[in-house]
View 1: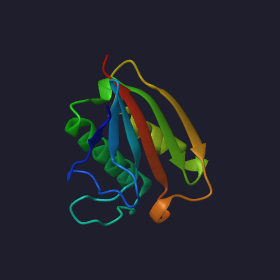
View 2: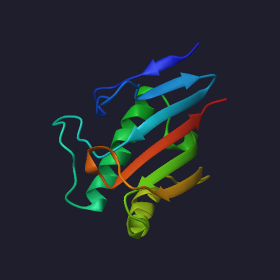
View 3: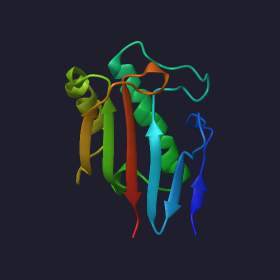
View 4: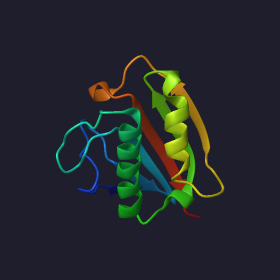
Length: 126
């Protein structure tokens, strides 16, 4: 049986999907963008601000599901331009302390709400 995860500490879905779903110990987190959950505003003054907001949103969903970054096994980072990679990578990496998850990073033509970064994750508790 799947368990749907939703928290007001991360942005509400902007479509027909859940923030995350737990299935057989796996937590599948939908992609997060830099929307401030309190104001509903997109945080886009810099790629650093965007990335920090995305990671805060992910942290809120992980915590709601009783998971942490140490449980993350796979991530996907979507960027509007690969020139943003180094700065996003540095901030992303600061949320992990050891045993980094598997990951791919891809540049895409466009992202929701015109953002520059979207990150999705899969976590596991066995």
